[in-house]
Length: 141
Image 1 (cartoon, helix red, strand yellow):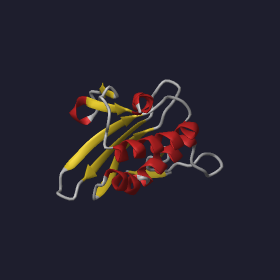
Image 2 (cartoon, rainbow, N blue to C red):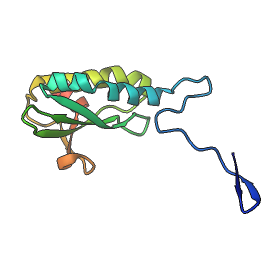
Image 3 (cartoon, rainbow, N blue to C red):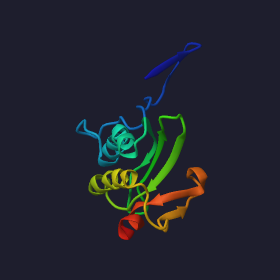
């Protein structure tokens, strides 16, 4: 890309694509991008499992060797009340983590949140300062 300003030409780097849309060299999305797209697309399923009118997936962070999967879901109930929930999953490969992570979110939402709450963990980035550790929750159920 070239820009002409006051008679001078200069080359600029290409404008990056929107987040989550940049394909890999073969024109396909990488595993992390597929992970994010899949969870964002699961919002209607999350709403149905929670008995909510609607759901928005506000944040998705794919897992990595050093980072846990993370998904923030905002549910809107029929009475207009909102619930802002942050779910934490395992570390690892996005391709291997996704099927279990979204299934665990669905099961947690449908479960009515039974248990002693030992799966709630402090998380300064989560609404209300706590997140739902699905790995811990799965072991208590």
